[in-house]
Image (tube, rainbow, N blue to C red; front, top):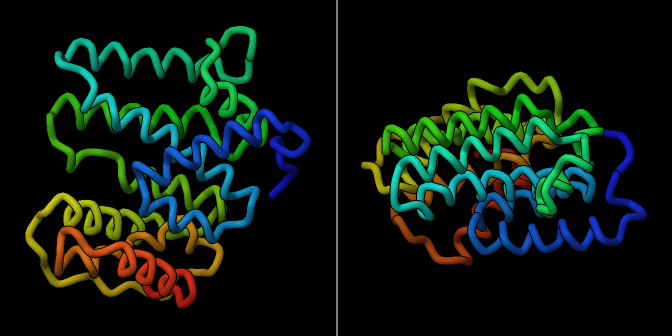
Length: 219
């Protein structure tokens, strides 16, 4: 998968660790899955999920819609500057993303797609429109380019996110066994099995469910 830009850069390594703690606190399910990725891919997943968190928080942090649209546009403007450190504000996440952009694994187009998805959900005041599927596909592409699982991942993401929001449980889809390399990107979707029974499964059950998915590939 290429060299790791964080290697030999202690400041960047420390920054990614800080992002990981934030993802662990606010997006535990994806963090648990990402823990089973190789270090290089885990760093990429951490940055991706940290970026997604910034976008998801806009809905919670603004009191008026125009302020939210301004924030989404700010992120678009900054993404356009990635790769040009002199043009970026002193924002740790933007600096880290700019470094990773050189790897061609995290692209401007992919990041802009997440901005657009979150803005649409914000504008329509409908969390079901949040880009859960696109986020998971991007995560999977970081681990296994050309995996061919886009359709299945979108279906799993819709089921998982709906149940997590408290939508009525239905007959869960049966999926083929997930390839080993993809598992750290989507094993958290197995939690839909717990969410179909309880909105708040305990921590041990959550961890055990994700571990089972990582070990077996059955999601």
